[in-house]
Length: 85
Image (cartoon, rainbow, N blue to C red; front, top):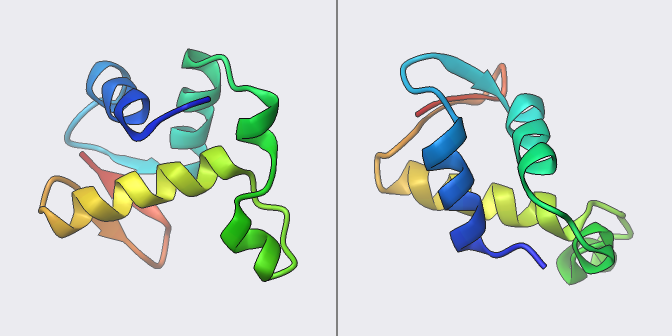
């Protein structure tokens, strides 16, 4: 099962800095660089309460991106849903 540390490591190793990267591309980088498990693909408990099936691993990616945004490590463009690392 993927962890926040795994996600951060992939970000450090695979995401280029200084250019806008859409969330969809970030998700593809994670998928292509980590063997996601059945648990990773199951809905996160917070999503189940909302009657949504958003995969747990994508929820973890969002949490890492949010924490990085709060620390000033990434810039988030809400309208286009892109990030600069």
